[in-house]
Image (cartoon, rainbow, N blue to C red; front, side, top):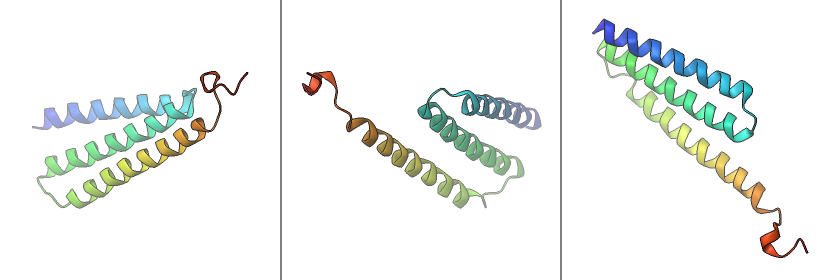
Length: 97
């Protein structure tokens, strides 16, 4: 079991490093928001991996709270960004003529 958890830990670390690169280099705010969401999912997976490795379930409430915060935060930021882009008129609206 330690080989599997070690391999999973290495993969989670590599995924987190790639997300941090996208967070730093992301050309748009949507890329950065997505990187933060994925980093939180990687954190949840890491905590779940630690729970499996030590054979206890005391972190389940923490995992549920983190998942809810991730979902609500992602939806809130997406609604905020979509509200900003809906206010600008486009050529198809007929306002540009």
